[in-house]
Image (tube, rainbow, N blue to C red; front, side, top):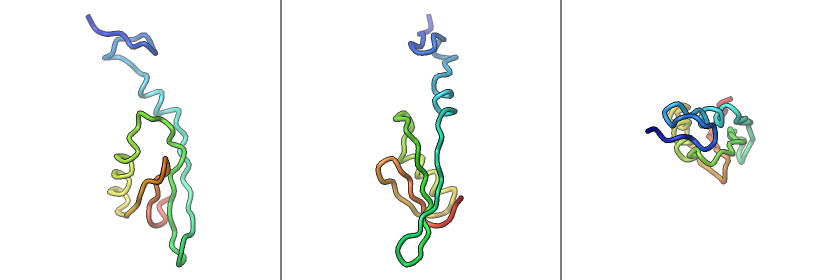
Length: 82
């Protein structure tokens, strides 16, 4: 017997809770000028605790071919990557 999700009431194989949570996220991407005129791209608004912010930052840094860091729940990438 398959386990039932407590949130949506569907079996765990058909559970849609994670997809709904991801679709309801609204991330804000902005740029900021730092020391010596360097531009930093900020990704903010990722509030779901189920999303590993460090893994997401690592993926973004690889895809954008740039350095970056995580400060709190904000991902900062070096350069303009809007």
